[in-house]
Amino acid sequence: MVAELNHEPVLTTDFNSKTSLWRGLALVLLGWFVAFFVKNYGIFSRRIQIDILGPNPSLVNDMPYLGSVLLILVGLLLILLVGLAIKSGSIDRVVLGMFAFSLNADVVPMLFQIAVLGFCYILVARGLRRGRIPFRLTPMVVLLGLMMLSYSVSFLQTTQPLSLMSNMIYRSTYMLLVVLLPALLVSRRHLDTLFDFMLVVAMITVGVEIAQYILTAMSGRIITFSPTSYNHVMTPFGTMPRLTGLMYHPNHQSNILATQAAMALWFSLQPKDTIDRRRRMFLFAGYVILAFGTVVTMSRSGWLSIAIATALVPLIRFKKVAPWYLLMVVGVGLLAYATGFAEAGYKVVHDMNGDSADFRWHIDDIALEAFFTRPWFGVGTSNFLDFFNPYQLEVHDTYLQIASGMGIFGILVFGGYIFAVIIRLIHVVLNPASSAYREWAIALLFGLMITGIQSFFAMFLWIKFLWGVFGIAEAVIMNNRDKKYRTSPNDFIFLPPQR
Image (cartoon, rainbow, N blue to C red; front, side, top):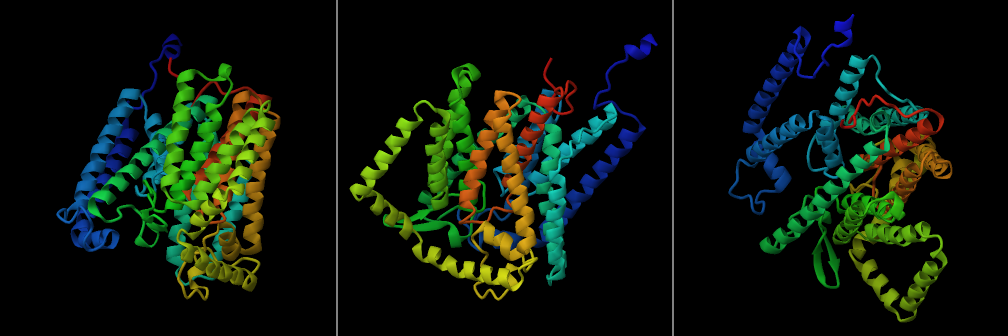
């Protein structure tokens, strides 16, 4: 009995017959994947490079083995991550860092899915070892099921079911965050750690934007990860590059930067007794850097959203001086209008790619026609290009994207989901278990406001960053409920406190 009570803890490196078998199978699978890659890379590498970079890509004309170089870099990165995992004693922070990086980097393939698999492994492996898997199912799971049902209706109308199936499976991993993150992020420390990772990665992407601008200036050719159709903007000062960081679209880059900038600004302005000086400086510096990154994306919707958030955060945070602050903002606005500066600025912004912006109304008309033609379930997700669309362009409006693709059923399901998230966050603001969760709820409301504004000008429904925000919001809501009505967990499955 004494021996049983004083047994040594079971480590993840302990071997037995089952772990040896599973690790052997994993190594065989890894070897097969490497062989598969080598075979297909040798056959299709040149064609893939031309498809992605064009026949004469800048700066890589003398690198015919670009894929091999990138693979070596990925391998070195994996070695670094394994080293960090060994040094930290677990893979938790590595997986969390990969997840934060994936939210800010669409150009890195499969990184998000690898992070999700890491989350699932942590939950299942440690949960089985402890005799419980801490999934905290919420009513939102019902709405997620209805979303998948709405998506599945598209199979009745598509001519490419295999393509639709692959997109559906791929995007369902985004929805999985609404279930995974509440099970993993069960304390304020977890939430703060994730946001720190996200903020650091976002600042790195701003550095990538600066590198893109320098390379563009050196080569005389716009170098970003976006296609030529929207990698530049016409201004009165000439053609300007639309920098994308590690995203494919400048509007998506501006959205993730503006969202995290607004949250960082809100957190940085907390009362003195709730935040230390070093963290306040880190958060405010993050806001300044990300706001700059939003500006250089040349995304007008990003400019609008970050400006509104920057104006509203001090108004809500400092209630005592809010009337004077509001009068100052109104006074500056009236002065700009009276002097003609506001009108001149609006004209400059309006005329930036004015022809392209005006042309989008034709696409919006097609989206409305699709909705009124098939009002109940829409023309199907990803089927908009096949619906009498001579321009072969996607609609640049998230709300019209839902209406045309999923109809009234999709509007009710997605609208109900977003409404439920907002109402529950407001409930946390009004009935917080602690001030920390109130801060988080307000910050997330600011983030959702930014996406709501930009959704009038771009498609964000199937961007994984948005579903990451939804998952974090669900974690905040569940943590607030558990802390208020129960006790916080003492046995952490994920990121246990250091002893």
